Length: 116
Image 1 (cartoon, rainbow, N blue to C red):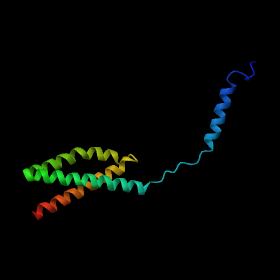
Image 2 (tube, rainbow, N blue to C red):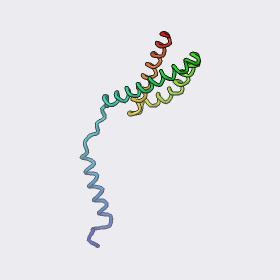
Image 3 (cartoon, one colour):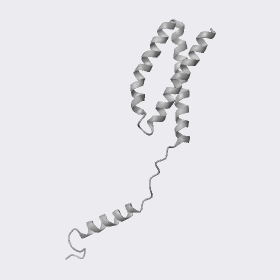
């Protein structure tokens, strides 16, 4: 023997020591972070809503029909990604913000189109 015990004993002792430490870890908190999530969703909604309105107004000056078609194509391309993001814990807030942003952007565009 070389003073370290039987071969493999040290490894076994290390594994048992770490397993005992892992058993004492606190339970993981699985609650939904509403404050942070809604803040992220609001920021994403503001950015996307602003982009929809600004780009929509720019294209509307060229041709209103083209603006409607481009908005529908953009949302049609974005929808499958947002639907898949709904089930991922962090990305669901981005999906919520994008949906709200596009919806509010369309309402603002419609109101501006009726007004002018």
